Each structure stands twice: as structure tokens, then as C-alpha cells.
Image (cartoon, rainbow, N blue to C red; front, top):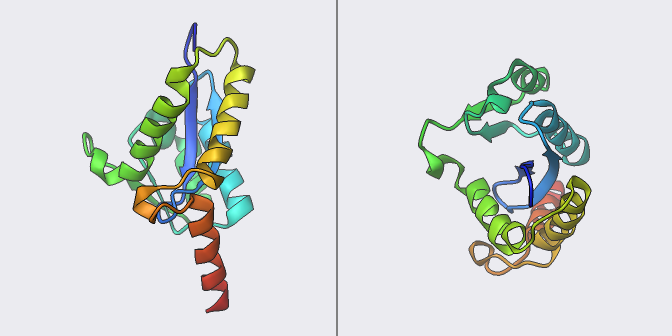
Length: 150
């Protein structure tokens, strides 16, 4: 932001790169991360595994107990092992260079609105080389339809 910092938490489907849910916060507390995962579970179902880095939000009792309560396996990257979480790291780079660094948000609500628009574009309008230039939504929903048909 022009003054201060905001923290973005995103839940991404690794296979399709679809952003399932996200939250923005002006603190590093775990609650916004918990809310993001809970929304993803409500909208898309419970994953088998959630992978995070070792940030304090993700190692907090609130976050780990929420995952355990849903019987979700916890996977945390080792220190300095960015490759373990390459899908989300690529998303962070993309959102920074294609959205955040191009603006100096004045307010949290302005940042939230622009990020909402960008993430909608990211899911529905931005083709990805790793997905044969399909969008995350195209890959995610085709995969879901195939799984239901099986």
C-alpha cells in the first residue's frame, strides 16, 4: 500500500491453479487464513491435504486445530524449500507484478476491490502456460466434471 502493509492469504487448487478463496488482512493473525480455508471447504469440499509454509499463522493452534477438526492432513514446507510450494509462489509473483506493483492502494477497501477483480480475471480470463494456455476455471471444472462422471 501507499502507507503500511496488507497480508493476502489464498487457497489454491494445485492441479488447476484456481484460487478457491482468499482473504486480506492488516494483521498477521491466523483468523483470516482460517476463514479463507473454511470458505474453500464450504464452496469446493474438503481437501485431503493442505500445504503451507511455516508462517506463524499456519503453525498457530487456531489454524492447525481447524485442519485437524476437518480431518485434513497438514503438510508444511521445510525452511527455505520454496519449490515445495511453487504453485502459490508463482501466484504471489504474478499478482504482485500484474496487479499490486502497478498501483499504490490508498485504502484497504481499494486494495480488496482491485484484488477481487484481478483474482476473478486470474481464474476466468488469464491463460496459463503450464495449463496449455487454459484458464484455471477451465481446468478445474473440466476435472471436477470428469471426477463426477467416473
